[in-house]
Image (cartoon, rainbow, N blue to C red; front, side, top):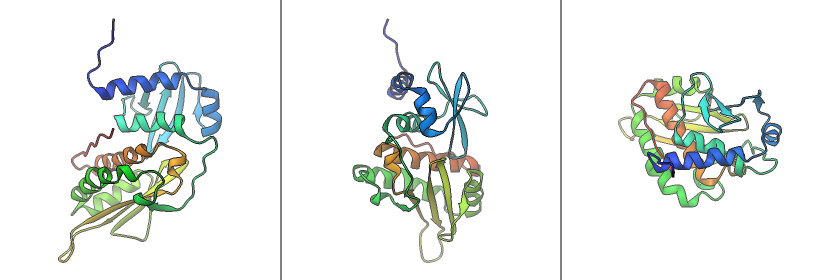
Length: 214
């Protein structure tokens, strides 16, 4: 009997679970320096502890046993699948348009990520600062709220925000490691940015912004 799926997102996630199970897990452990035991691989993502079942391929939040959103799951699976053999972060953070091969997704990034991010945190600088720190961010000198946040242990993003005043509207931006697409597929850069917005709104106690990419 053919399995029925509630949504295309569910089907895609199931396909990637199966693809993960076909990967050499010992190779993944070595390449990504993963903590592991007989049942799980462990990974930290935007301040969130994740665990991946070595038997089913399912990804859960390690601290509460809940399923993460589609973007979070896809980014993890795709990193394991698409990363170069020995990727190395550049350490230099650049605007989205300077990231390799992401040009087709720039409009989606502007409309679906930066605009909701800016609207949500307009007038909420303190909440954004506290949220960035909850995600493990370190303060940067730019903006009213500027933070460098680890995505995975291997590379970072930066969140920059200037609040509105009498003359200017609020402005938000993100910067990405120049080598991020050595770790993940170019479309995953948008998924990561979407998760940054979602996890920041959660941590800030504001109305959660969920953005589904793909």
